[in-house]
Image 1: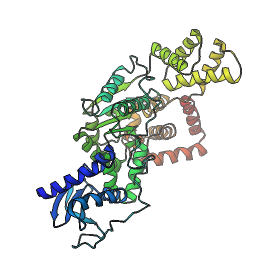
Image 2: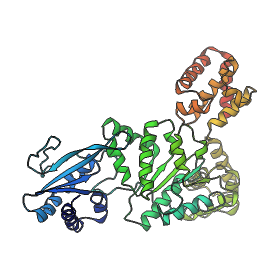
Image 3: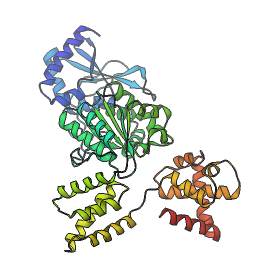
Image 4: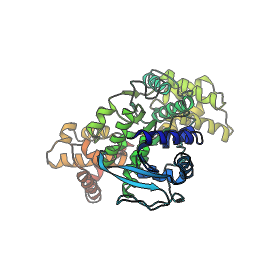
Amino acid sequence: MSATANSVWNNCLAFIQDNIQPQAFKTWFEPIKPIKLTDKALSIQVPSKFFYEWLEEHYVKLLKVAMTRELGPNAKLIYVIKMENKYGNKEPFTEQIPSSNRTAVGPQELDVPITSKNPELKNPFVIPGIRNIKIESQLNPNYNFDNFLEGDSNRLARSAGMAVANKPGGTSFNPLLVFGGVGLGKTHLAHAIGVEIKDKYPEKTVLYISAEKFTQQYIESVKKNTRNDFIHFYQLIDVLIIDDVQFLSGKSGTQDVFFHIFNHLHQNGKQVILTSDKAPVDMQDIEQRLLSRFKWGLSAELQSPDYETRVSILKNKLYRDGVEMPEDIIDHVAKNIKTNIRELEGAIISLIAQSSFNKREVTLELAQQVVEKFVKNTKREVSIDYIQKVVSDYFEMDVATLQSKTRKRHIVQARQLAMFFAKKFTKASLASIGSQIGKRDHATVLHACKTVDNLAETDKQFRKYIEDLSKKFS
């Protein structure tokens, strides 16, 4: 790399930096490297074709002015794009694209007019809120540390979250994996960390996204042949928050691309925050190389809140809503709804609604009615492990027998019923269900579900099995 190319580009950068926002400069100009200067043509290396297209779409005029100031009216800018293979390794070839209205020389150079503007150019990852290069964080400001009350059940996770928020990427909690059951505050805590970071470090790019949405975006990028652009976009993030990472189970392509993104972010001191409904050791169908990286930082569990914490949560909720309620009613709700915080807050909201809409005074009797109805109507989260245990107990066998390779008819039917109920009552993929119930494949699970449906119509005894077990899961 010649010093002349360096000096010309550094002078251009000084001019550009004075004319755009600091975050835009950091995102779109700091990653560029000057390669060579030949006559009046400066070659610069950019990370991807998407990167080049964005520069041409949004900064072509600024680049032209900067180049003209340095090299005169005949200045020419050539983009050198490093291509990547499917493993993310650099290939020993480049694509050169001139930013000029002159036809370029050489077999790999394409003619792109400097005045070209493509109004259809959009971010290929369809993340709402990406406008004028500002990446919207997708965070909910209502989920913050002020209303995430501390108790014995969440002290470690909350403290680790605060430490990460104070020094993102600068603690040993990278990645920070928060895991626990439904409604215990995983998403709330993940948002709270992001909100705190944005407050303390407004220049940092923070992005919250669910693993499901991440997967959809990746699939879309494969369809459009923009996988490298997808990877590059996520590598720009300073703090990446992925919710429900267990959703990546069985999705090898998405796991592979996340592996490369994770490595890049971690190696560059960027913060990764993950949430999951289970600890890494219990995750099924997640590649070992990913699981080992999840364990690099801290895995903090959120447990069901104890009585004192439940009372504090209720009082805080009432205070924020400006509602007063007698102690005995708060006590009744806290003692009877123990499973998770979402149900707890849902019950108190129902109680307030009953009182205000029906013009009824909030009495202990009303509280008892609401709580009883609420608990009864709240669908219990059922795990695959729980389903296997219930089915095994019903047929008087142990779980190991249920999962075994035996082809004895009554054991096969029990196993098929377990798969059927796992598909019905959980969000797990067929591959994940099969893996957890005796290491079967997704085709076996699909066959099991069809068999159960067929037998339910033709076999009276089998139909009774389904009815009996259904009651246990309702």
